[in-house]
Image (tube, rainbow, N blue to C red; front, side, top):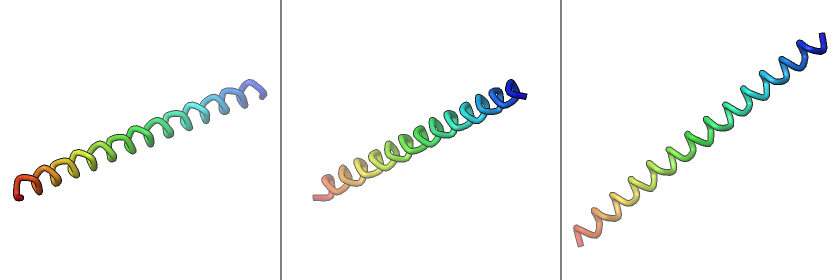
Length: 49
């Protein structure tokens, strides 16, 4: 019984780690896309002036 508990805990820990890493990755991608968009917009405004 205790062995099953440790396996379950390990699985939960893996899921938690994967979720955290995926959230971090999504956050980094979103920030990167936003910065690219902001850079393009600022570049466009410089060309207009």
